[in-house]
Image 1 (tube, rainbow, N blue to C red):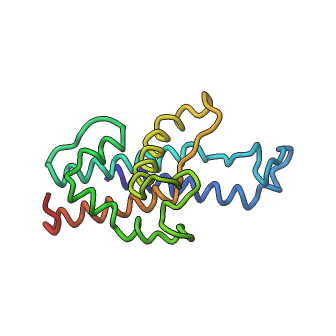
Image 2 (tube, rainbow, N blue to C red):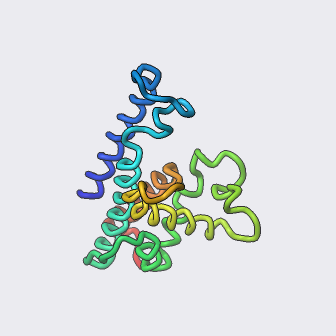
Length: 175
């Protein structure tokens, strides 16, 4: 339930950002940078943190469905790596990941930062690490200059993890 709560908080904050973006030109006295007041949206950092935290909590829910206990810690990549191989494969091959509509050219991880000799799976792991790092770093964004993770990937990952947890509960996936 907490994963859903933080995911819904993210969605509410995103709606607030969308509304602010639509009205940015009417914000009296605020300088504009690239169509946004002060070059960021008013609830961007809390929204990104809520989304990353919900990813973590969905992974913990999956662990609970598999093992009956919830692991501790905030490192989402470690939570993923602790899963059984069959479950990791289920997440990686889930339609939300493998056929994500936001990947418009080539494989889903055919992005400049993931191109070269590395595999799609390596890009997948890098995306998870970026979300994991994002949870910690975005909470303290005032200490950093550049922070980034792909929101579309976090949303796709949530769908894959939730679906896998549901399938596990229905005994369709057995590690």
